[in-house]
Image (cartoon, rainbow, N blue to C red; front, side, top):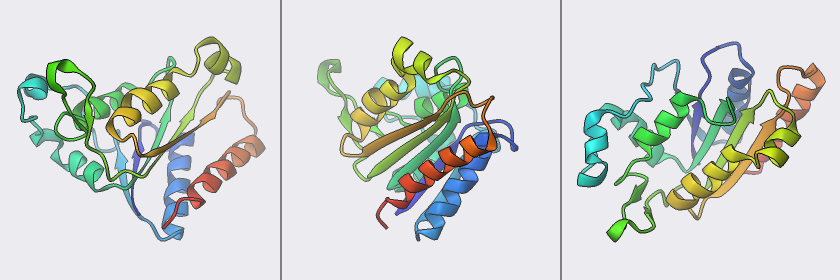
Length: 198
């Protein structure tokens, strides 16, 4: 498959960077083609422009500034998202990638009378979200009910690529883990990716 890995962390020595390298190696070893979208390294601007916002409903979408990102998304059959969860949400740069790249006419079409949107990312077969959190698991799952997972699975992937298989793995208490715990999490990530069909 053609796989797109989207990394959203500013530090090259971060755990997210390590997990990105691991995901790349596993997918390439399986024979997949991998493209890397390193949002911070590419200085991606997450702010929606005035022209882009105007064209959200008046169309066609003003895609010139994000044409290369759109091309990579539309060519991908699988997407791996690697990011930290900050304040129980996406990093701003990743939210901006969704705002600017998963746009009307690209990821979906508006329905008449502002009804349910119509999906366009029919080529996507798999999406894996890999995230790290400083909080314990019970705060994310029991108190806040996994807000990032719910938004990704239901509001973004579920509406733009409903046929796509979505999975998410979360590494909790990421600032307090032993090397053994990190290795165990890394092994589970590798196991998920190795099951993807070539």
